[in-house]
Length: 327
Ligand code: GYE
Image 1 (cartoon, helix red, strand yellow):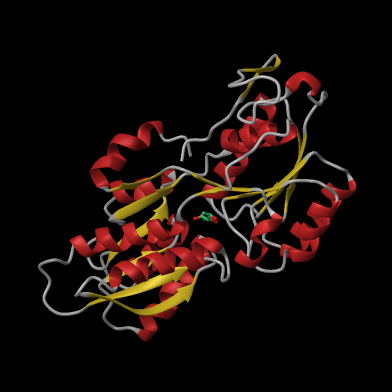
Image 2 (cartoon, rainbow, N blue to C red; image 1 turned 180 degrees about the horizontal axis):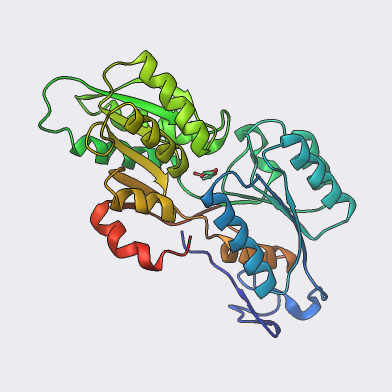
């Protein structure tokens, strides 16, 4: 969904293209526009993957370009630390709070406090429990269910002429995080419509390469015949590749492997023939976020859901994309 922004920010300052001045509900009433620097409190999940590092860079670069005072905290995977950061942003009376929730549950108390303090909250990347949907004004991120659909769809194409059941194992991200839940949901929905693919086992890899390797070792011990692997991000898929090679298997041939993110490392895995499909989940959402922040600062309306870009890479498209890959 293209972001509708009514206010443009230049490096030199703020100017606006109004679709209707004055009290027009479509435009902004900048006659009494608040002045001064916009302060944004942002709590990041951590530094667990190339995707996350690119996401952080996108947010920091865009805040600088838009002259927004970014109060940035990296929780390094701790929900407790994220909650503490959100409280500190409320205490500091920032204009807007944004964060990527490490897991979906446990946010009601702090987000209720933000609402009572009159500070709008924007979710980036991941979501929180649906019961708390009225505690944030907008969410910007990927459609994780469709990423799971695409991974299963493309893996299924590789087994159309295979006889008998195709055994698939899944390597999951952090339990209770939105991408873990929704990528699995999407993958299972497409598998249920495929008469060969069957998910026979799952293990958590917690988004890291080491975690993916550990998960793959456990899955290999439990499942002598594995035809395909769905790893929920590139790092875990590449960790699985090292274990499969050590076990004398030929990842990319057997088993076939699909991952999500489309980082440089993931595309390199495609070029090297170790991965077969990589679903893109763009981390570059800094400008989308700052556009929402500026609109909120000026009392504008924002969309409740803003989806980021996605695509699917194979070896050929990875060869073409890798040289100019931004992350
Ligand atoms: O797939 C993974 C990161 O929330 C979409 O988190 C993000 C996921 C991404 O650790 O690499």
